[in-house]
Image (cartoon, one colour):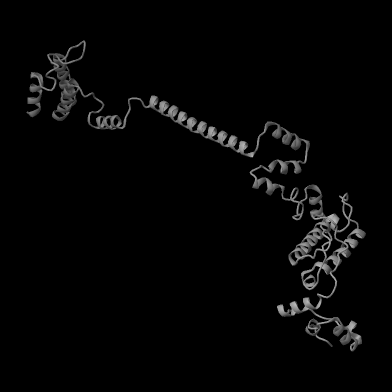
Length: 334
């Protein structure tokens, strides 16, 4: 049995044929691929340089073919492929693989079906294999095929005018969103919106500016409304609590404990003094009643019955005790 490396080292076609004659059951043997180094690949390529370049008769004669054109299908097919069409598609794909697969196309020359006499480079052969594989994947997958039929989705090898239209517009500072809206319009309402947008000359940048302005106005209204509500709340609370402070409350509480609800003027202090004095000196009810009448007579003698104020009290000498105060103070000392 001849090893695979021995076959790659044959320099001429005659040597290969002469050695094959010695092994008649050569066709029954199976060869398995294995990793080989660059020297073996270069030797295999040189051994095939004498062969004529391979011609691809399946590839369509155009630079940017569609998946349908690559496999020779009718471009008007928009429904699901039949089983016969899928089988034919699979056969053509296997033929393409035998020509353009990187493991097979490395050691052979392939003529370009578009330009007469041109040999495909290794990069072109690899790229063509990618195009064929992607086209086969789209046509055999019902979901991807439907998207491709609608808006050419999942296909990255089309013409620059159709496939890279968005990138071309972006590179030249054009907006490509209108194109996307056109192809993705699913109802008459979407188309009407698209037409109205074109008539008014509005784009996404203008819409974004409008949204920002509306958002700023809304925030300003919210802030002003919160300030206004705060002012209204403060005014209502101020009306309810007008004239009442914490100091006033504390002072009233202290007065209720110490003054028993009496006023703080001079006459009230005299009344309080007389009441405490009578309560401390007398314990009998008759004596208390008699002393209360005497205190009332004394208060009437030193106060004006109409106004209820003390008699002979000057505004300048409010803090200076008069003769009545001195008399009461002497009685308090006694």
